[in-house]
Amino acid sequence: MVGTTGKIKVGIVGYGTIGKRVADAVDMQPDMELIGITARSYNFRIEVANKKGWPIYATEDADLEHLQKNGIRVKGDIHTLIRNADIIVDGTPGNVGVEMKKKYYEPAKIKAIFQGGEAAKMAQCSFNADANFEDACGKDYVRVVSCNTTGMGRLLKAVADKWKIKKVHATLVRRAVDPVDVKKGPVNAIVPSLKVPSHHGPDVNTIIPDIEVITLAVIVPTTLMHVHCLEIELDGKPPTTEEVVQQLDRTHRIFMLRGETGVTSTAEIMELVKDLHHQRGDVVDNCIWQKGLSVKGQNLFLFQAIHQESIVVPENIDCIRAMCTDMSKEESMKLTDRILGIKIKER
Image (tube, rainbow, N blue to C red; front, side, top):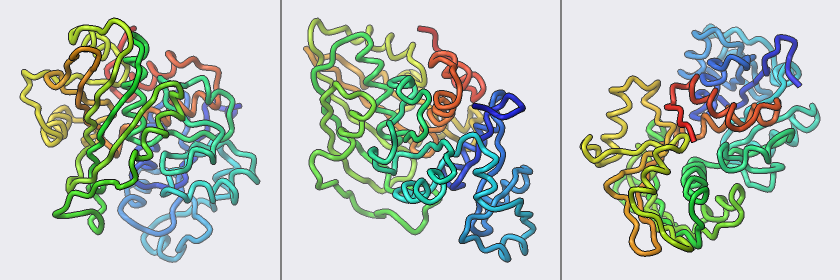
């Protein structure tokens, strides 16, 4: 199931926003080996990967002359990368992964992980580490759900572990584009998703099938983070606000923003993690404002911020282990969190 070194040999196809972060995370893991990434043409991301000494493989439509002219030594093609790997993490843009699966992964009989931009039906299951780790065990094709679904999945799993959830209403205030996407996004507009409810609720149900989740979504002109405004209707005796805070505080990959810190916006969250020297200023935790959390009657209200560029990175690492080893959920999550510098929670 793993290579002769005893490590899981991981190849990255699609070295963009998610791919480059997963590559860094894989390279840090004691039980994994990053055996290479793919490139189509020379750019600053490929330059950095080259400086790190990572093997670079050419996609079939790669501009080899452009790569070589800029000092990139191409080790081989995508077929070679796939042959040498135990598993591929596909970080290609949405709806490309399904084509890569048909063209490359299925013929080579290689395990592959896809991202949330793909349709759920193209994989054997969707994945969130805490919510349904076991579903991915031994599977060949698994989809790590999107940033928004990852954030909602973590939160709702934590609440459902202690209290029965009757229904969830959520409004997702979505960033327009990632910071690097300078050619996209509304500059002076708020754009509601007119598909009501939005697709996010059904996506949550691919990892937590037994909770009714209804979502609305709106895109706003910011690049920093998404914000979720949630109303969770509970069944049975409701908890106190303090009990919910305690439960979330002990949950993997959830960070409670204390009011005393003065952090009241996504901009301040990003400034905080930069001051803490997080790589790239990434925030892999759900960030929940404690002051905005309250229980009123049967309803739990809260706000959480989701860093779209990085929140799925630890999920990809745990998904690799679920598919390629017999490590348990708790063992994998603790190891991932320790290596990536995420605060480890005991439950």
